Amino acid sequence: MSSTEKTVKQPLHPSIIPRLDPEYIKFHEEVLQYITPPHTLPWDPALRNAPAVPGSTEPLKVGQKQDIDLTHTNMRAFTPEGEAPSAGWPVLVYFHGGGWTFGSIASEETFSTNMCVRAKCIVLSVNYRLAPEHKYPIAVEDAVESLQWVVKNGKAQLNIDTAKIAVGGSSSGGNLAAILALKAAELSFTPALPSPLVFQLLIVPVTDNTASDSPGGLWEENKHTPWLSPARMNWFKDNYLPNKADWTNWDASPIFAPTDLLAKAPNAWIGLGELDILKAEGAKYGEKLKEAGVKEVEIVVYKGGPHPIMAMDGVFCQISLQRFDDSLTY
Figure 1: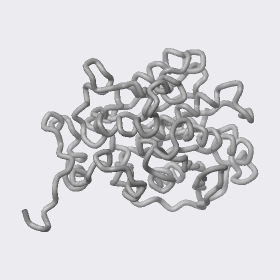
Figure 2: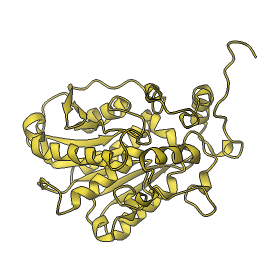
Figure 3: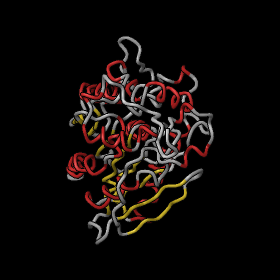
């Protein structure tokens, strides 16, 4: 082997290749297959120096970008250019992906700026604390505090219209967004929201931490999918949720929330990859929201897409943006 030849670390499984989107195959063969899967390495925080999911394009220009401190962490606010609506800017409180272990407010800046510019809303990207240093429910606590900040300070500091608050996230961030949407619907949430959340944008979300690739399991159909393999997902779970007794808590797995609470959740758009191991649990969660009586739940499955479709932001932003933009008229 020549000194310049690369070693394939993540080959595509033969059974999955005919089903994969050709654009993804090209990206995987050029980039992803040469990356050593982090779950096969000894834990080191330096693993976070690599992109959580490679493949993003350049962020768009926004009117203002500023960081805001929370008690233990911070958020990054992206404000559109131009004049705010008379009632203030709508806001999307957004949570990045990375298995509760990787990622930051910078890792999905392209998606955040696209939503900011194209939906003409403030995007607050939350830098929630990460596992394994900070295990469940620390990330949930940071998510709750981010929304509390919006209710208490959003109008005064960012000219946010607190009657138009949405939450969203990808993968583990979609998990936190779904949980926060339920937390916000509880009567005990303080300070009380001036009006219910308008929307939840869930991109390839984790909704059921009891899922597995065993026969009949929710991951079985796509157990040979690239990038987010069952082994990698179990590693993420071990980092964040090492106590199996927590897996069925609804603030870890929102699919286990009681029906009366699910009924109070905001309208939802759920984007899934056809070949993602998380597809079945995401679809099942959407169906549970519908059955509970949530008015509008749209489940979109990206054909041929495995989990890293979130990195294909040029495609994914377009199909998620319109649904989010429509929600701001409610």
